[in-house]
Amino acid sequence: MPAPLAWTSRTDDTRLVFHRSTQGTRTIRKPPRPGADTSRSQPASGVVDPVIMARAALAARPDEPRALFTLAALLLRAGDPEAAALLPQLERHDGFAGGWLTIGDALLARDRTDASLIAIKRGLRGLSAQTPADQASRAQHLLGRALVASGQDGLALAAFEHATALYPVSAEAWYSLALLHQDHGRHAAAAACYRSALSARPDFHEAALNLGVALGECGLIEDALDAYAQALALRPASFGRIAQSLVSGRTGLMFLDPGRLRANLQARARPVAA
Image (cartoon, rainbow, N blue to C red):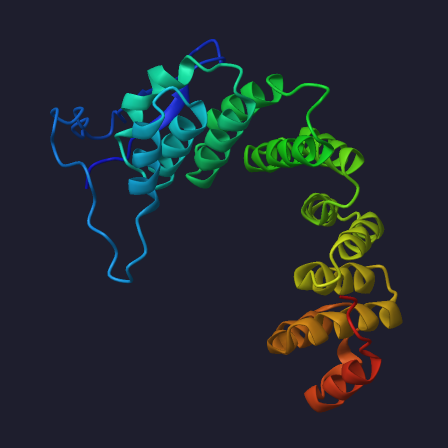
């Protein structure tokens, strides 16, 4: 099995390069011959391959950086070594913030954490004071996710807090901040962040369920049951996870009877705001 190709950083930690792993070899795909058919087979469902669409967009507007970065990100997510050929073109658009953030997200999805951080930081440098708050928040949230993946939890905490300050109705940023607090045993802080996530998005099932866990760890069993009731109302199939959380928690043994627990939660449930 040939080793996968990866994007990584140079020794100065400021540039991205594409290289072959020393653990194996793989042939780098050469650019297609002029006039060659570069299309991929269309999925049986009839949905057009997004890579084909990205190629068409780039062919129609070869000087448009958005099309270039979209194609590169799709190839990276697919683990396609053809992405290597696009890197020199990407480097010509050093200030295209959205494009580098897209590349960083794609690299993070492939567990290329170091390279992802370089791309994300390049994208952040390209943002300006005129960048909409929600976009700036998403960029900080992406940075936080990459920092968590690289084991830099302290810096990740600052990034998530920055994301929520920039755009306080970002449910995803509040949720990530809550998870980080919870991972470090800061259950009260986690509960507050889960509440903020639910305030921003009342149908956020995972936030409701984890709020129940955090409140249970704080010893607030009644509040925890209210949160679990909300989670159950949002996703009835999650009852097993809720029951397991209560049995595993410090105050859950009173609900070893699943029928009694379900009845209790259903009685507590309140309508979810539209």
